[in-house]
Image 1 (cartoon, rainbow, N blue to C red):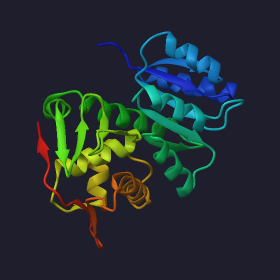
Image 2 (cartoon, rainbow, N blue to C red; image 1 turned 90 degrees about the horizontal axis):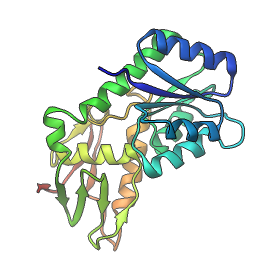
Image 3 (cartoon, helix red, strand yellow; image 1 turned 180 degrees about the vertical axis):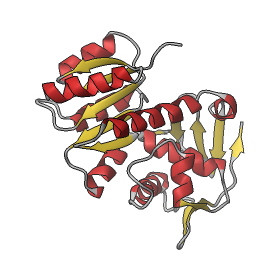
Length: 238
């Protein structure tokens, strides 16, 4: 079995070396980069299983790089930053990151988070999940094309979603007309930033509602006070 390849984007040489060594000692192949140009060259060198992306980079920031990556790829991304507030984690989630690691961090935490994200990602391609990732979901005039990870509006237009928004919407559809607790939504979607007490799910639901609203029609996601959320329309799988 080929070792997963991690693209490590970190401009601090000592930290980059230490992080790469820790990952290599735990069985990962590491492709290091110190800037945006180096990151894109590393992408061209071959398939990447996960990106460990520092936010504070010289030139193009990690935030801008995340946006650029998400335009073409759903590769898992873990943000790394000295800023560890809830607001920073929420911003990372909104951009489509899969996790957020605050500096300074220990080797055990780093490896645990990398393993968790890769485990969730590998789960998306096997067994029952593989079946869920084929075909289309239809609800309230909307269509989710699972293989292409696209959301089409009732008029046929493609609505742009981050990776986190898409995963959460699919989780709601898979449990349509059932109330799902916030903590359970985090488990059902592959996205997880910090612990379940942060506002990650609330932010995602708010963004989804805006994108699913239009023509005077409210989004079909309701809040069940004190519990969680529910997609209150039936979903058809084709």
